[in-house]
Each structure stands twice: as C-alpha cells, then as structure tokens.
Amino acid sequence: MHAYLRYALERQEEIAALIQRLVEAESPTDSPESVDHVMDLLIEVNRDLAQSEVVPSPRFGKHLKLTFGGSGKSQSRQLLAIGHADTVWPLGTLRQMPFRKEEGRLWGPGVLDMKSGLVIFLYAMRLLREMKIAVNCPVVLLVVSDEEVGSPDSRPLTEAEGRKSRAAFILEPGTGLSGKLKTARKGVGRYLIRVEGVAAHAGVDFQAGASAIVEAAHQIQEVAKLSDRALGVTVNPGVVRGGTRSNVVAASAEIEVDVRAVTESDARQVGERLSKLQALDPRCRISVEGGPNRPPMERNSKIAALFESAREVGREIGLELEESATGGGSDGNFTAALGIPTLDGLGAVGEGAHAVTESVLLERIPERIALLAGLISRASSEDVGGRFA
Ligand SMILES: [Zn+2]
Image (cartoon, rainbow, N blue to C red):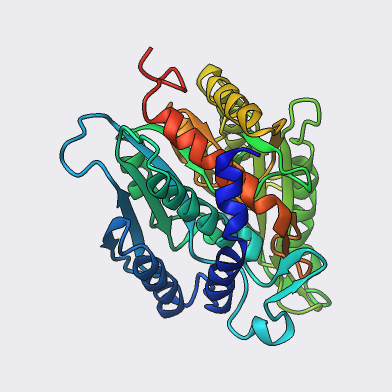
C-alpha cells in the first residue's frame, strides 16, 4: 500500500472526529456568528501548521486564509486550495439530521458540501509535513463564508488569491459515488424580468386593462425557447410572481430566470436575447435586470493538463481517476475564468449534497487525502497546468 494511503488509514478515527466537530458546528450562510465559529475551529486545529489571516465581511461570516509554509524563503508562486465554511442548512437541522456514522458513511448537514473536503485538505497538509515531503511553494487555503449564495462578497478575494497562484484546487465533492473530478462547470446567470401592465377592474373596465400576467405568460414561453440542449444551454424561468387579486387586471408581474451555459459566448448570447425581449401587448413594458453570476469553467488545455497530472498522481497511489462536467457552479468558476489551471471535485466522495441523504463514504476519505497530498507536492515543483509555459 502507498505510504500516503497508510498514513491516512491509520488516522481514520481522528479524521472522522474532526469532521464530526465541523458538522456539529452548524453554519448556514445567513448566520455570520455560526460561520465565524467554524472559522475559529479551523484556526485552532491548524495553529501548529499554518498562519491564519481573517478577512472580515460586512454581510456574512468572516473569510479565512490559512498559509502553509513558504515563510519568506520561497520565491515560488503559491498553490491555492478553495473551500467554504457555510452550508445550506438552517440552524437546528441537527435535531432531525444528527451527525451519524452508519453503513460505512458519515451523515449530517454539510458533511459532503463541504466540511469533509476541508478536513481532507487539512490532513493532506499534515501528511506532507509529518512525512517530510517536499513542498516547494507556499500553499494557501482560502475558506469563504458565502459560497452557497453565489460568493458575492468573497469573489474579489478568490480572484486576488487566484492571480497569485500557479494552480487552484477546489475542495467541492467529486461527482457521484465514483467521485469523478470536475474539469468543467457551466456558468450561471441570474435574471429578473419585470413586466408592467395597466391595472383595471376586471368586471367594470376589463378592456382598459393590459394584463402583466398574460404578457408574462407569453414572455415565459419566449424565455424557455432560449434553452439549447445540444449546446448545453439551459434557461429556466424558476419563479413567477404577479397580480394582486383575481378581480383586478394585473399591473405587474416578474419572472426570475436561471441561465446555465458551457461557454462564455453562449452565456453572453442568452443575456443579449433576454435584454431584447419585446412586449407582445404594446401597452405593456418589459425590463430585464441581472446578468452572469459565475462565468463558465471551460475545460481548456491548462485544466486538461492539470487533470492529467492528477491522474498520474492517482496511478502512483493505485487510483484510476475520471473527470466529469457539471451544470453547478463553484468558486472554481472564478479562478478558471482568470486562466488559472483549476481542478475541482477534489473533496469527499458521497451523495445527497443539499438533501436529507447527505453523506460521505468513509472508505474513500484516505485516497482523497493521499491524492491531494501527492498533487500538492507535485504541483509545488512542476508547472502542472502549463500556466508558465
Ligand atoms: Zn459546496
């Protein structure tokens, strides 16, 4: 057995115990104090390994930057790992969904997305230090507090750290129970279409009204037509609101639309089409707000090269790694869009993110630690993503 795997296997109990501590510290995005508490735990357990720097946020919990090694001596550009401490689960979820160790899995809110991913990274760094494996550049772990709401506050921080980095490793879960790595993610856009009509009494003065709801119904059909299955473009009118009472011709309506696209140009094209929507009823007015939220993570040659390095490291450990593409966004979208070689899905293997079945496979944790350790060691001395070629 590979020495890295043995290292992680021998520590399975303490690794599970740390995951339990993090899961039992509930941390929904909208509870800054709770997210802060998780950050404090991360600082505490890494006191002997990393320098910590807290970045306050005006709306969310604080962000955390942990720097491992490279204290002044190293001239090399850093490696970046990105995770998040927030979850989608409200405070009190633990009462219905307590942390459990059952059926070879760990269960609980946020266990897969992504508290286990954070622990996997931390043990990879511990392994590298305790086994005295060379890491020839600083390694930074950025843990943000607002990922589950689209990272509105942390995005500049992620981009600034990304620009300083030779490669970015994203600690989101792998795809499916095989735990495929992620080399492509769709970009995400959010739009709000407002329709203004003319209100009127539905009984007395019906003809004087121009229904915003009827107009919105037409626009929903137009918006839905922008989806293109072959290109992987999806346009989802996900929320509709409008009107006041059934006996009033509706004066206003609005439609929230989620747009996903594989390429930047497809995303832009959908945005342009949405901005040109025309009212069918000339008495109605249409306005469109919003835009891209996360750019696509396009599988370019740098990402392919980084995945190839991961595969080679995987083979040394005895793993046959596969890659996948997903429609969901992550903070890897930001670093990839800046041209930084980015590999995503390096966190835990499991299923049920954002669902009551959220769980991770215990037996797959050691290999993820070994993989990340090998990848970090290799990427610290080689130009693994071809960034500087
Ligand atoms: Zn996540």
